Length: 206
Image (cartoon, one colour):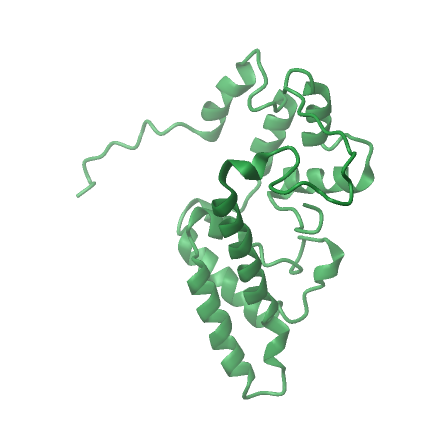
């Protein structure tokens, strides 16, 4: 019974982020300007995202698989409109599980098998789940070695390439330009600005 819990004191998004804006030091290397942009993007989300998250994610999964997956222009590096499933966030937060997505896609494929539409048109979603699992288990296998400067294995075809880690202090300006989408590299900046504005970024841009 949670009826006696007082929720009047739950802070607003602005109250939670104000200490970050008041800080004299970058938070996770992010500038105050960027933190402000991220908060404004979060505030711009439809209000229904504040509740019934799992129900909304299930509905969006069904709509995408049924109406958009087979025709999505996935080579555009574009997460706007219906070109992306946008399943990364619900998978990361656990509001959808890989098994739920797999079973629903398989169910829709069975339905399509009774029509003139090829069930192969939505198979790519399952393929992407498999790729996701591969990299997760690759990370578990490598452990700390995944963060080695040279990678888990030395790159044989570039044996003389010199690499070095820069501390955040030494590389702060470059890091800030990257996270703010101001590197003057058009493809990089487009991806970072899209991430700031929407919370999503194409896997090709990543």
